[in-house]
Amino acid sequence: MNLLEALQVAFGGLLANRLRSSLTMLGILIGVAAVILLVAVGNGASVQINNQIQSLGANVIYVYPSNARGAGGVSQGFGTSQTLTQADADAINSRQQDPDVVAAIPIAQVGGQITYSNQNYFSLTYGTTTAFPQVRDYQIAEGTFFTDDDVAAQHRVVVLGQTVVDNLFGTQDPVGQTIKISRQTFRVIGVFAAKGGTGFGSQDNVVVAPITTVWAYLSGGRGKNVSQIVASASSASTVTKAESEITTILLQRHQVADPSQADFQLQSQQDILNQANSITTALTLVLGAIAGISLVVGGIGIMNIMLVTVTERTREIGIRKAIGARWRDVLGQFLIEAMVLSGLGGTLGIAVGAALAWAAPHVPAIASSTFPPPVVSVPSVLLAFGVSVGIGLFFGIYPANRAARLHPIEALRHE
Amino acid sequence: MIAIEKVTKTYFMGKVEVPALRGIDLHVERGEFVAVMGASGSGKSTLMNIIGCLDVPTSGRYLLDGTDVARLDDDQLASIRNKKIGFVFQSFNLIPRTTALHNVEMPLIYSGDPHRRERAVAALESVGLADRARHQPTELSGGQQQRAAIARALITNPAILLADEPTGNLDSASSVEIMKLLARLNQEEGRTIVLITHEHDIATFAKRVVQLRDGLILSDEHQAA
Image (cartoon, each protein chain N blue to C red):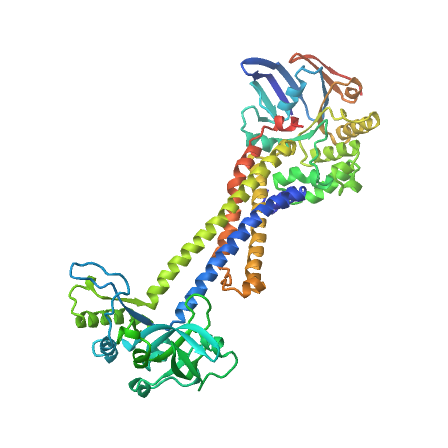
């Protein structure tokens, strides 16, 4: 008996009991669809987070103050220190010891209530220098960015991100208007093009001003605080080299001999990506594993139905053996039946899961939320199909072997 | 064709030995039409199972068409059943929800015959059931089902046709029809037929009658046609 005939016999057996076959298949279908959909959701989150991290700017290295250690070596906690200065940023930006750095900017970050007319909104305000758009990869959509003169003269000018514009100005043109940040007056001279991305770390919810202006009007009593330095490496492949160059410069400037005692820390785009990826991978695995449980339940359903089928068709098995079916013919027949059940259920499950993943972003409630659009991955589809056929094989072997080992005389006598 | 020598068969029900056959010698030549008779418990079903290679004897020798089948394993027995034996059962034993044509060609599926469709059609024609080929067993009368079963038994061109109470579930008209068909197959095509029955008027269709009692042969007589 060749494979084609075996498949015909199996389909015949399944068609003879349409309702039962479809219900059994439904178990696998739901399991596979759940795996496909949930893995797609995990993937979608991963893709979205990756895109947002990428939108922070290419090849970017962040330098943060780190836990300063007191005389006794007591860590004082993140962010308590202000170890970075304008001079540090200048030294990195000079590129004398760090040829792989293209530009570096200091950032003084303050939060403040922003008002325009009767609108008010909260956003972070970054005080920085003129290389900000280059380093952080922002485009000017309207107006201009501030100049070195603005920085030198502490001009009260700001450039706004798209989210801030939307919330304060609606459809009005903000350029040339005056806004207040923490009750200080500033003139809007430009608007950034939207970088996209919602929710987590939106890059459009931002106000940028000359760092000297922020120090003079918004820092309160904190003086010339530099909350971070952002540097960009010449290319993705030089990021690691640039990182070690920056570390060398800062260790030297801060007179720290032991790198483990450094009062600053570096984080590259790649570091953030890696961290995010390890989180989203774990998320995807957990989601997949939860869905996998339903797949196992579906497999047990197949085993259950195959056992019933074998009992019910004992006489048929006896007839087949009497007219010459060998052990492997009967084993093959029931094994293929189980695998057709699970394989067909798996294929339909893939279709349903992929359709749901595709349809999800079109549901208004999901479209308007920050829920990431699911992304169906090809490996998950192949894996799901393989696993579903494998489940048929695994859960089909016991019932099929039971059928194949029946004694023909006893099977024929079965009523 | 069939050579059974000193065959015994003992079943074990727990620790109790139940002797079903206690030493049978039986030779059936090509082209014979033998009826095996006996009351229930006489061992005729056991004998049929052994002749049909569904079971192996406890002791003794059984040569079928020159092959000693007493010591074969399950798969070899399956192959012998497929090629050398055609079964006709009391309860027809067609596979449900499967057309007559598909039922008839089934033995050839297991032997892997590429021309099985044509042969199945021809076999159904030879039993006068060509117009019912696409019907399922439940759509056929008892006599028609038994004729389909005979077509299935004949399709592999077996050495013997083994009929176990073939008329047991049929009315008298259908019984006569089936017995005439078997007699014709024996006379015109020279089929070797072993018939198992407990009805005397059915046994009269055979040329030779073997009586069994308590696992032994009581009588073995040729009778006039």
